Length: 422
Image (tube, rainbow, N blue to C red; front, side, top):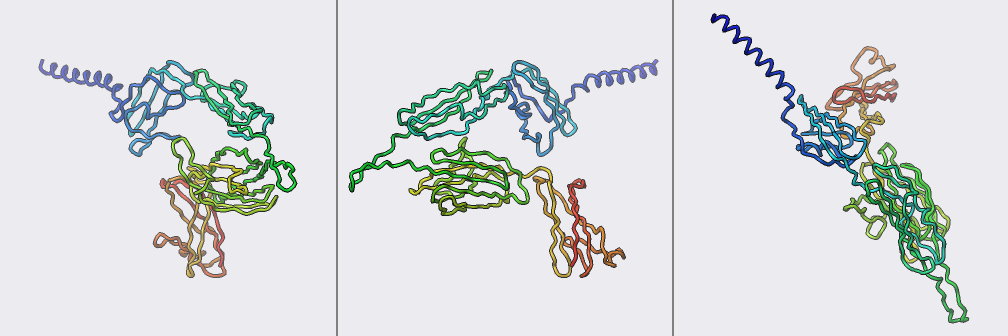
């Protein structure tokens, strides 16, 4: 009887463990992450960091927690309104999941782009406010420039400062706005000569700047005094020859200045560029219709503010073209060069490469072909000593060397070959 009781007790324990394990297993979700109580999500403007309590760092490449990658999925949100959003996380062997019941809302206003933000026109000159609209975009709705409401307050018959106001609303009643400032000039000034008592008309002088930019990007244009252009934003990948090449020409004698600054953004405003106090790093005193050339090579990633400035005879800025240049380093290795230096008894071999971001790589060099008898005898022609790769060569022979760039995990990234002969 005791024997049966013993076996029954054993099976009960096994049954309890099995049943308990069955119910406990789905409940184990790890203890690293905890979810927030979220009821509202901004459409197309949220990350994992908005959904968990922990300090997760997210960017366009993914999310990290304590410098380790977080593998996660968030169910796709295609529309506004109340809906379920499911989140799954895997981190260091732990699993986490939650379904949020949220109201997805759009609180981002549409953006209206204008070809000009300020105009100076003569009295009674005709302007078409709609011609300055270039595009409209919204994060959710498909909007057209025809939907823009234009409020034109400009009185072209009366000199003064005016504004043309452009507005548009999306389906969530977010209003986008852009403003075109218009200055209407007065009649031409009449000057009386004391010599012959005749009236002389003083014509308004206008400076025309023709510019052409190449190297980093290609852009040409013509600017007229009083109609300066707003800043153009350029995203550029840093390369071997990241050089800015500019040719400018004005239709009168004057001064052209080129300014490059690394001023940071203050709030939502760009620091001014082209005014007094900024470093002039190039420029010319030019005569009418003569070209001015300028080159500048970038070596570091970052945001730069570049401006072409024309000063008039009163040392005032007459025409100015601004560019915001965002130079970035590719996260992938784009190209590699093998570098060699003759140290007398040996050739030092190294490499340089473009891109790779902050990733670590190591370089290896190997001999692939040579007419040197020592190489045929399998002697050590290429060796690594004191972290320097050395080719012990013999004058008159050639050496084909392959340079290979590897990741820390041993994956081959790039390989180049070079022929060395001394």
